[in-house]
Image (spheres, one colour):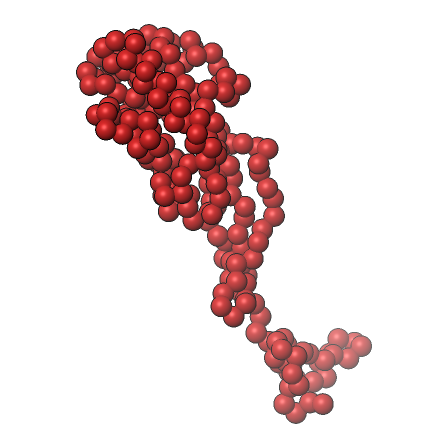
Length: 210
């Protein structure tokens, strides 16, 4: 699921904010070493945090039925996870970096959910929207300076992008349905008084009984 969100976010930025500019979109950690070997103008979208959105957690199961209407599996609601990206621009001049960030911000402001055509099979298979929020300071769990310190780089202007994505759980096989019932008669002292008879599941009479 995470790699599908990566690809969708990269597609949104490349297709809508950077189209025709020749600027690439990178996903690597923007460390000092990365910056030293990266000379081309680049927008970096670094995934720095993943955690579950507990407010969206649902409980219960839903039966998955086949063409005959029989329950063949149990399906649990998907879990939702918040993927936080640090988005930065890298060029030779600060003015150009600010222009790139402005273009990305304008693009993502108009993107309330990831476009369906950019979603991979796991995300599109849920049929659920994948919301996106940008530049929401409350979504950052720690100061940005601490993040840059951990990366070993120099503090730069950045955008926080938070994408909340559903993570589908695998279906669980349903218990097999009994096709017939066994009927056994006993006396009050527990001894069998009749051979066991099998009754069809549909409740029709067993041959030889009334």
